[in-house]
Each structure stands twice: as structure tokens, then as C-alpha cells.
Length: 281
Image (tube, rainbow, N blue to C red; front, side, top):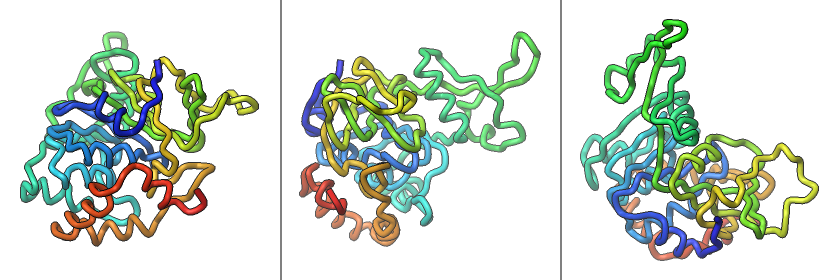
């Protein structure tokens, strides 16, 4: 049953040192505010799961909170590298991290398997691909009905999933509009789920019934955080802040500059800073 909390309370109550955690959102609705609160609380030794890790994972890694990253394609979208992630892999700064790389298809299927309570995902994939030579978590199985060789990967079962969405009702149901990645599956696969939202409304009357709604019983904590996806975008509320992504490439390239930026923009500020950064809110 969804519980309405502050962001500080939701993170403290649900995420613990050593947990496996997913911060999901594909292109838009990326839960930056939630990740920043995790950084402020200094929750460490995390195993991070995410399709297309971007700058929030660069920040978590750069602050030394991650011990392992399970992912498909890591990068600063439209810009280039994740420089803090690369520094951790190549130079062990601020600490060494373990990486487990998958394809997008494997990550999506692993979330679906976790949501279904299955131990693994079975799908067509990795044929002729070299990734399985360096990732021992990629296995092959033979279909007992057709004899076809298929790929298999472990299901994703995060301790906690964080997502951002447009609306929550006062009952605790969650509405997601626009591009949907694997947010629904990531929530259903997790033991606990924290959802930050742009606004809380009485109900979802007069909305199209095929819009994605997570019922209140799938969500552990709900938090009102306007602007909580910035600098990514939230459909119907604000656009992607492309300048911030370009700026991050320069900030993350230098350890000292990165450390200064994180102190000024994350450690020394609260979650309400997100609303002030988004024009029109």
C-alpha cells in the first residue's frame, strides 16, 4: 500500500547499504531527485541496475556509492562518455566497481522475468554476439519443444526501484504518460518501490484508459517532487534540459570540478531545488 512521504523519509525507509537498486526511466522521467537524495544520505555499496545508465549513475559512481553496475549501454545521451564511470573502471577512482553488461533486450526481458517472479529470462538474443564471451551471466538453453537454442539471463529483482511519473492519485495510484521504458516492470520486479511525481490529484477521471497506471498496492512510497526528473524531461510538464547534459561532459571530466559541483548542487541543497531549476514550474 502506497505511503505518502517526504523524499528524505522515502529514501531512508526503503534503501539500505548493500542493496540492489534500479533508477529507471527511458529518455524521460529519469528520477534524478531521488538519486540525489540517495547521494545526500550516503547510502553505499550499492548494486545499480539500469538500462542505459546516464548522468545520475555517473554521479552515484563518482561519489563512491556503487560497487557494481548491471547495465546496457552507458553514456551521456547525445554527448558521449560517462567520465566518472570510466574513471572508476580504469583507475578505481574513487573506488573500483564491477560491471555486468547486457544488451537492451536482455535487460528488458530480465525485468519482465523479475516482475513475473521467474528466476531467469529466456529470449532470442546474443546470436553471433561477443558479449556472452565476457559476461558469464549470459547462458544458453535449449527449448524443450522446438530444440531451438535460446539465450538466458538472471531475472532482475531489485531490493528497491525508484521511478518518476506525472501524477499520483490520493489513493496512491500512479499515472505515467508519454514514452514508457521498463518502469512498470522494474516496479513490479522490486521488493520495494518509491515513486516521485509532479503532482498529486484527486483521481484520474477523463483520462484515456490505456495510459499506464500502477495501482497503489504495487508502490511502497509516494513523494511529491515537482521537477524531479530534471534535467531529463517529463511529458506534459517540461522539456529536456540539453544544456545540462552538455555541461555535465565538462564537469565530469575533472575530478575536482566534479567534486565541487556535487557539493554545490547536490550535497548542500534539498529536493525542493528541482522545481526551481525547471522553467515554468
